[in-house]
Figure (cartoon, helix red, strand yellow):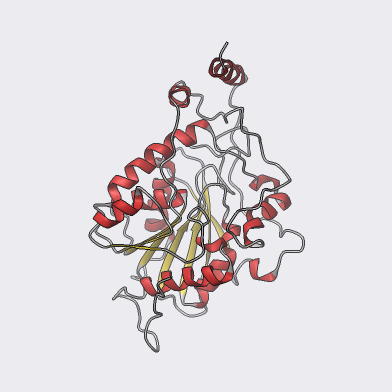
Amino acid sequence: MTGRHLLLVLCCLLAACGQGQPRDAFVDTRLPPGLATRFFPPEGWAWGLVQTGDYPAQRYGVSSPRNAPIAHILILPGYGESAETWFETAGELNARGYAVWVLEAAGQGGSGRYSVAADTGHIPDPEADLQAIRAMIRASLPQDRKPLILVGSQSGGILAILAASDRSGAKRLVLSALPPPSQVTSMETGLTRLGLGWLRDPRQGGWRRTQTPLRGADPYRGSLAHDWQVANPDLRMAAPSIGWRVVMAQAGSDAAKRLASIDLPVLMIDSGLPFEGACKRAPRCRALRIADTASDVPGHLLVDRSRSQWIKAIDGFVQQEPELSPRSGPPPRIDEP
């Protein structure tokens, strides 16, 4: 019997046990021991839940500047990241005058899970996320006529493109460390069609207490997600499900095609093919490389020098929005690496 046949038999045996009950969404987590104060929740941070249709609720968080915000920034994190890993960035953007919202992906972080294996990120389709993004913009963000900036990191960037292409209401789109569309096997596609997509590939282990350092990231920021997961077992994420891989492979392919026709101003940072090619064809897209970074490291986890350029690039790009309230002095300049 071939390895593929063994894998199929194992998956079917696991499926016979049933998927079980998915976990409900939750808010609030405990601080990891020894966490530096710069990674604490920003002042006034608040949690909320958004739910659409029959999909499980998704968790989001929000923090605001001390004065009226000049714009709203809605952040869509990458796979395996909870909003806690964005606390430092949210606080810095608050200091620059922005209200910051972080919407966790469906089936991840504190959002409701679809799989009985709590550390397995799974979604049946991208509509769960796309409907939650629409609901956030329509019902959760204040209707104060302030511009909305959609920021997508890694797999969250794929969802940001799909949302923006459907006239989400965003004024500008920032894409960071977009991954190339993943390749899936015919067996993975077949298992997903059989309703077994919620399973994780048996060759991929579950969550581990030991961590492999994230190459190219700041050593402290690179361990943030893991530190929060050690202190909060419900946040733990290992490899995604077979179905998540299949769904996001198709979503990534669709996003690369749609990016070329998006008429919003787009800033794409440290992303490779095929998105760079799509950005060149898009009417108002600009690709930017930050010095000394690996393209698969999200900008908010970079070392100080590179991360400062990343923050400054986003701020300078947003400040080109004519609807923003004027600041004292010129908007920050984007330094080309």
